Length: 286
Image 1 (cartoon, rainbow, N blue to C red):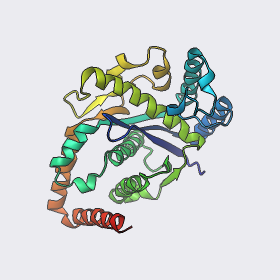
Image 2: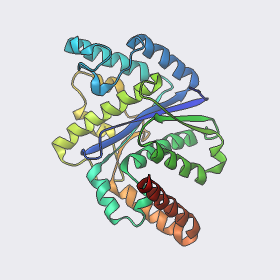
Image 3: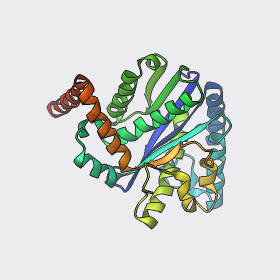
Image 4: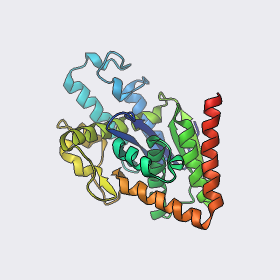
């Protein structure tokens, strides 16, 4: 695994047939990532942590035999390892039904693709925007996502960003690694923690949309776990929109931008449409 000056790790939580889908993780400098890896390995004993398995017989850590307080203390300890100085914790979530409703009326639904790819692209956008505001856009960044079936979607999203920003592209690297990768495991903890909050909020409220383009995650702080785990993993709002639910107006606005782009540069939009149609044909013939 190659660490660059800056490194971003993201993982997904939830399924597209569920109410809420989240892609979340963090980015930090290479030295900070090295410290996280060292502390994480010490805490887990080198065993793979997976939040969905934690507390069950499938957990490699043996947490099924722990007391409830032992599990809480351990999750808080992991939260403290990742939630430290120099780490930017990012999460983007959406209501699956809202995104599906958008796709039904979108003029360019092939370009937007499944919900996961839209969220992955917004995670990278949030990272890039943060670097831009800090005048660090030309620093090297390595993006890492979990290796799996959504690999093509994420590759396409990152490629689209690089095509729109060619000066930045040479400073970016994209990798797909297995879940057992140590520095991906904190992303699993973050995404799963965010999803738990939003599932609780969705169950209570029926909707996460606040009528604006985005709903900040901390708006749902009453749904944070009472045992302090959520607060340990997710830092308080710091004035920057790094953790949020993206609402349907955002996608509608992006579709409108694509309409205007076709008016100015139709060859760009037609190229994207052709790529997605060809990809579909390759899948059917495989």
